[in-house]
Length: 108
Image 1: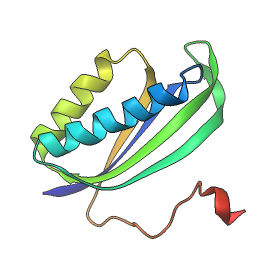
Image 2: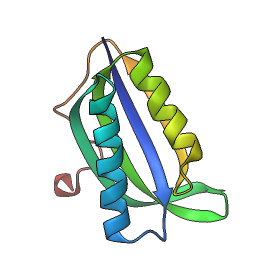
Image 3: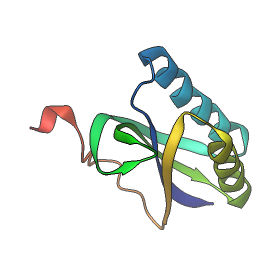
Image 4: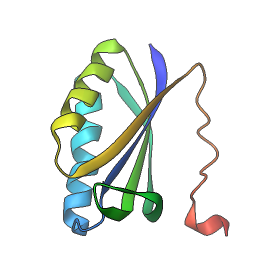
């Protein structure tokens, strides 16, 4: 199994309950398809450097997980049809850094 980081950017106008449901949905999806979520980080509402689909801000959710090709295919398939997500990025790693949180609110 390989290690992955997946960052999704949700629409800025989603309610807090919808964001929680979105986070839980992809957490459950990773665990269902033989993956294992190691860490979930909510980075919050962040300004985008360029407009994406007429949005100037997005709510960032960052997953660190372990999975295989099937896990990755299912996640990306669901993300592509999810209308509340405006952008995503998945990166493969040999080893995950679980200690550092780059957008931690307490580190300022």
